[in-house]
Image 1 (tube, rainbow, N blue to C red):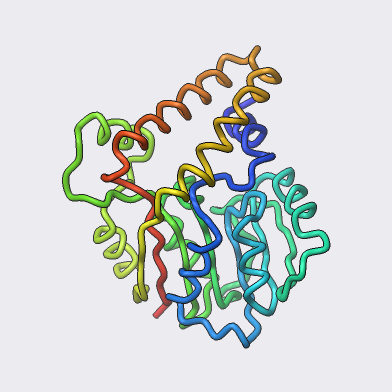
Image 2: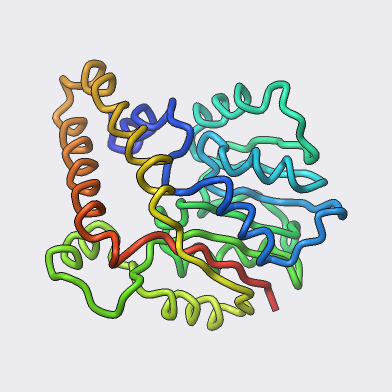
Length: 249
């Protein structure tokens, strides 16, 4: 079993597969200046088990295509949306976020929370732009420094884990260079990391190790998670996820 498959099993029963919350999704929609009375065609890329997908479907009309590489996540989403009062219809697609079967300029909105790091921010927002209509909205959350300087142990850790981490101003420049007009951005608050992500993740470790403890890589994943949690507790003033909202021009 490879690392991605193990990560899928670890995160499967958690509400979120990364930092975030419903209020952040709602705020991003507000900054996007979206008229929620109109129907939209939306792609939620790297949707996981669909926490933000459901929020979008409650607030938007039209159709949402929920995309994730793991069909198991999508099946879990089906359980989540059953009997919910949703305005938008949700359909599901098992596909890699860097190899999507969409038509050019197919979508009004492309959404991605805590997932673009899998292929890199620059590559993701450039590739996904092909599927956005002119004037379409991109909303994406991305790991970001929130200061210009930080302790070396923290910087070394994240540069090793995700070399594309950079400041909000640098992320905005990447968006502008790729042909977007940035409408707004904000930093995810602490509860998005602790209550909504790390605490549930920590609780899932025991069952994960009971099931996969015979695989050395499973122990390495848990160790990395715990180190990341310790770093966040110690250094949370220096980094978070930034939520970036932009329009294709």
